[in-house]
Amino acid sequence: MVDETSIFIGASRKPDDSYQRAEELLLRYGNRHGLVTGATGTGKTVSLQILAEGFSNAGVPVFCADIKGDLSGISMMGEAKDFLVKRAEQVKLDPYQFQEFPVIFWDLFGEQGHPIRATISEMGPLLLSRLMNLTEAQEGVMNIAFRIADEEGLLLLDLKDLQALLANMADRADQLSARYGNVTKPSVGAIQRTLLVLEQQGAANFFGEPALRIADIMRTTRDGRGAISVLAADKLMMNPRLYATFLLWLMSELFEELPEVGDLDRPKLVFFFDEAHLLFEDAPKVLIDRVEQVVRLIRSKGVGVYFVTQNPLDIPEKVLAQLGNRVQHALRAYTPREQQAVRTAAETFRPNPDFDCATAITQLATGEALVSMLEDKGVPAMVQRTLIRPPSSRLGPITPDERRKIIAESPVAGQYDETVDRESAFEILQKKTKEAQDAEAAKQQNSGGSRWTIPGFDDVLGTGNRRSSSRQTVAEAAIKSVVRSVGSSVGRAIVRGILGSLARGR
Image (cartoon, one colour):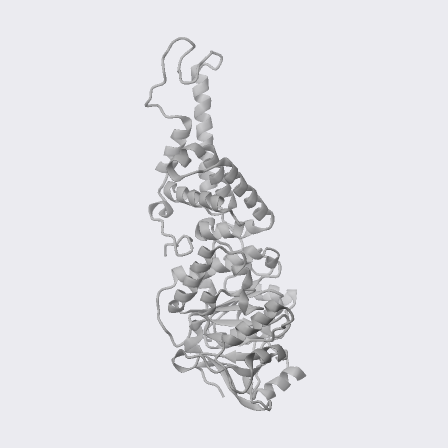
């Protein structure tokens, strides 16, 4: 029925609802990206599950988010249930074999999987400003902060590093404004308050070290299957902006780190972006343009990006145009916007003379979808009304005990569990502040603190001995000391990528 060059999606139906043919996703076009859409409860998660299973069996690593916990069942062997067996017969899936798949569980909060962390420097000013929903003026201050950190060799690893740098910038706002543009204390204060909110929402767990190594989400097993990295996102969805920013950061990291490979016989990695509308909601145009650029160019790195969302209108047109493989589950059309979404979805398919696409979208049953995959030469196939195949793994969530067992036996067990807090901007600036305070105290003691003095004069009132112009103020000494301390690789060579994240030296 299918071969090793494709993934079996399901079976298309003739107008009389009889079997027509197997619908497949050709692996050589798996990096041409894709879209899975449909209303809640129409079967999007199962479509994601069978795609992940197919890519894994083909030796392609997968990264996906588990919004409701249902996707965790992919780690366990499926069970023969009447409705699954019936669907297998309808789509002529014979034999219908059950499997468990190699899964690595991840969690930004470290509760339902291995912790995932990124450093502030790797995140970059653009994505961080997006996460914090900063104004244009505040985003400008954030860019200045990263510029200063780069020039002065200050590693920004976690939130306290950025907080310390911003406090230092507020202290020398006048000097920095003369060089970089307006740096106001109110703007710095607003950013600090937003950082405090992020910290209270749990973002502090995400920023720090050890940072996620891209190689750990691109693993394969000894039997040649691709590992499926499942991100626990049920709690993460309480902060949807953090969720969207994290996945965008991960996609940009893949873009920056992976070499150009051109078209392969199968992707090197497939990345599923569930609840994709969160990425584009209220996003500035510059961010949307850069996302479109990443999506367009990451294909040549061997990475396929699949957006999963309810409504095709959630995806900007420039991004939508890059998505070659389409699975459209049912949409409801009660409101004008929903009716527009149905028309938009229908217009993105290559028409089929056997049925009206817009009408079919509103009549699809659960587990049924309109499917159009890329055929030979990358041409979209004619859209087909398709019964989606049943999964080989468990349908539904796993138990907490099963999850703990998988985490304990994971190939990355112990590598990310403990936070590492090495010397960075917070410690360096703290040390400089203490040195400056000690120097000031020594100066006060040497000058005799009880005598009357006038600022700008070194001696007692009336001597007229002005301070030598060659002497540094405490602030100047501290700043120059920080500059001299630049010796890290960050200070020597700063390379930021298309989304402003710091390119790691590898």
